[in-house]
Amino acid sequence: MLIVTTFDVPNKQIIKTLGIVKGNTIRARHIGKDIMAGLRGIVGGELHEYTKLLAESREQAIDRMVEDAEALGANAIVGMSFTTSVMAQGSAELMAYGTAVIIED
Image (cartoon, rainbow, N blue to C red; front, side, top):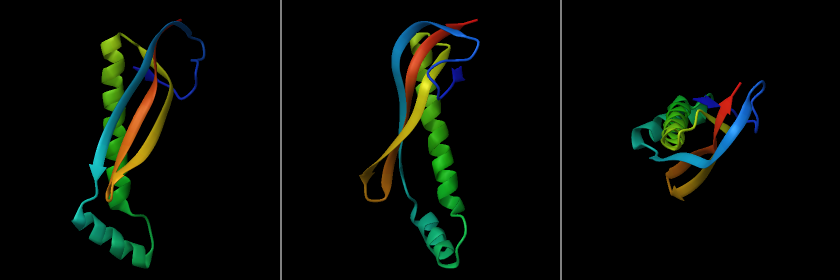
């Protein structure tokens, strides 16, 4: 599955637009990770615990979006983007979305 953030694919032609596809995940912070991140916040530096959590969330959202596109028979997703929203204190949703298409040379 080809995924691009642009609305066209160089050297390819979109022959059919299948519709919007999405994948999301809602993640909550972990108290142990919060403690480590809090300590790191005092001394400065990257919050590795949160970096890993967000990377895993993005991958899961993309995987779910791809499943949605495959169910429609797509071979590409154009205009892919992410959005986030706070669901409750300590948890947030991350959503990947785009337009499922069929492309050819």
